[in-house]
Image (cartoon, rainbow, N blue to C red; front, side, top):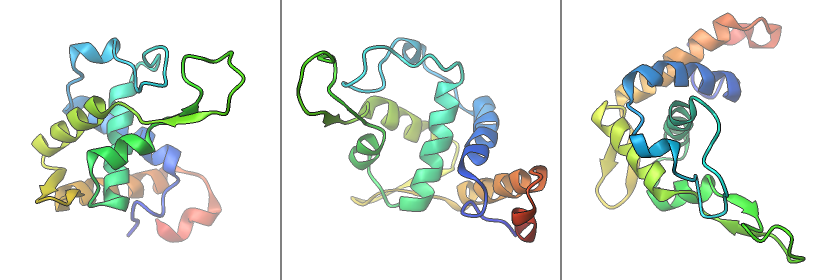
Length: 151
């Protein structure tokens, strides 16, 4: 039985994003919103919402219980912000809390994540089984001999 720790991260997130794209609705404002204060433009990726949701689900499963603030810091950027031509050390900016919060609320509505009282969010049993089943599918579809023992 494969778990989410056994599958390669990139393939797991891509496969999970394809499943979550049918479950979650991207808000209208998501095409125009920046992903953080340190960014200049909104994301150009066509399936950004589903990919970020898959990544958030995986991160909550690994680091949970975790709150919106720590998640937005994890998705922040290390740049000098909009002052790119200034000779100064780079600073860290947090990611958009609204994007993180909205995706977590959608995952809660799907029953994949639940909120613990004053501790943050954790993955439910359905969310854990979705992650593990997707990881098993990813490992079976890969042609890598070092992952055969997990299939």
